[in-house]
Image 1 (cartoon, rainbow, N blue to C red):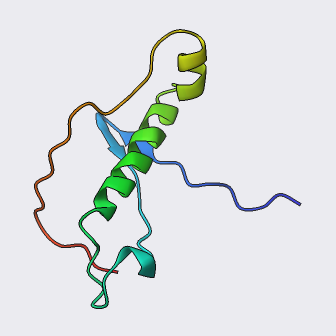
Image 2 (tube, rainbow, N blue to C red):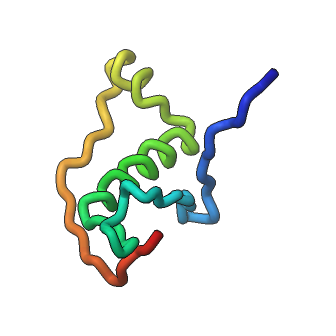
Amino acid sequence: MIGPQPYHGHFDGPQHLFAVRVYFEDTDFSGLVYHSRYLHFMERARSDMLACAGIGQREAFEGGQGVYAVADLRIKYRAPAFR
């Protein structure tokens, strides 16, 4: 029996689309997503984007092609996310 397959985003033109499920643990008591959780969501989307582009991060590192690391980050929150 094959279990559920993991979710993979996709490219829509130049955009990478990646759906995120917000769990109770990602929110405060009112259902508002903690500001730091956005970083978790973005890291998942970044890893998925590389995979969708055919880039294996481990293979690139082990093959001497370098690593894909975030060197700088700036967030401007436009609207709150809720569960």
